[in-house]
Structure formats: C-alpha cells, structure tokens
Length: 269
Image 1: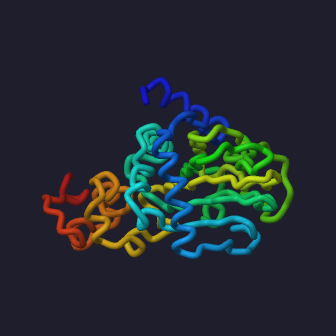
Image 2: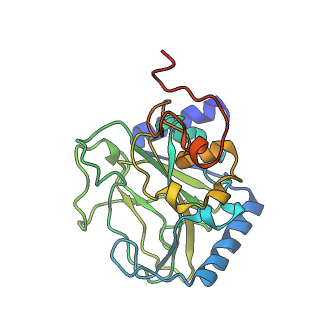
C-alpha cells in the first residue's frame, strides 16, 4: 500500500469511523480460508452459541491462529496492518481472530461498540481497531455488518438492545472492512438463502488486555513457527520496551528461547 492510499483510509476512519479495502484478499487465499473454516466446523463440532449477541444461527470459530498456517497471513496483511498501525501504533496486538458465519434466518446483532466495556470517558483516542474479512459477498440481504458512520465521535456507547438507524457496509468478497473501536455497529440479519462468511481480525493497543489471551491460547510450539512480526503481534514482545516484560526480558526470550539483548525503556535513556 502506498502512502497516498494509506492516508486516504486513515482519513476515512478519522472522519467516518471506518473504511473498506477492496480486492485485499488473494483469490487463492480466499478459497483456502473458506475450505479451512468448513473443515474446522466439522472437525470441532462447532454449533451456534444461541445467545442474543453471538447469535442463534451464527457459527463462530475462535482462536484461529491455533488452527493452521492458512490463518497466519491474516494479522500481518500488507494492505490491512499499516492502516491498523496508523490508527493505533506499531505496538498494537492481535486481540482476537475468529470466524463469523451468519446463516439464513439470523436476526440482526444488537448495535454495540467494541470498546464498550472499557471504563473510559468518550470520545477518546482509539484503543481498538477491528476488521472484517469478507469471504463471501456482504450485502444488506445476507447480513452485511451494519454501521453508524461518525458514531465513534459520540460521547457515549449505544444502549444495548436499543434500535438505531444504521447502514449496511456492503462489499464484494475479498474486501476488508476496518473500523475504529468506538464505532457503533453490529452484524446484520441474514434474509437471504445462503451463508454470509467473514473473519473478524481484531487488534488492540499494546497497553491493554487482548480479548483472547494469545499467550495461553496458542501452543508455544506453534508460536515458534510464526514469523517475528506475528510473534510480536501476539504479545511476545513488550510495548515500548516496558509493558509486558518479565525480569527485564521479553516473553519471547522467556518462553520461546529468543536470544537478543533486550533493553528496557529505562536502559535507553
């Protein structure tokens, strides 16, 4: 992604709270991801959670980085990660990586903000930046993510369960929707006859807790095979050479046997 495109997407997120990157997912990767999700759904026996938020006709598979190499390309995607780093910073972390497959008959998800449970007065600097990978076309009829543009600048989060006017973030398969963590949004109702498949690649600032605990959720033998940037995104480095250290060592040094001369923020002064 060149600087001009990056600035365009960052301006859109600043103004409207979201942006869409079309043709981001390589067609072969798209096919591989869809196949992997169907395989995992069968092998793991995944069924809908049957609650108002996760859905009664929605299949979600969590902790995807623990389930195959095909998912490892997602967090570091060159057309997505630079935008996220521009919203947060380069110390951002993988907060969660999960699939969301909305089947026909599903109702709309309650409108919410992804940073809603954080006890911080709004509006505030972004702590969360999330994305939705469209593995099928996203349309108003099949449950495209519903958004309220500009709502990330409001001084409160939505009242859970209340109806709000929103628009569908329609996009062709292969696209990625990226939004500010304060944006009001929710999954749409699927009134079509086919499944809507997406992958939620969620990031958070390096100084807050991840939604899914990557250090405990990922087997260390799997993490050792990750490229260094992905290890960092999963929390095996420190934030600004301080937050997350163990006796002035990084988690990668302590848990993965990484050898390097780590200096804390205080050593750099």
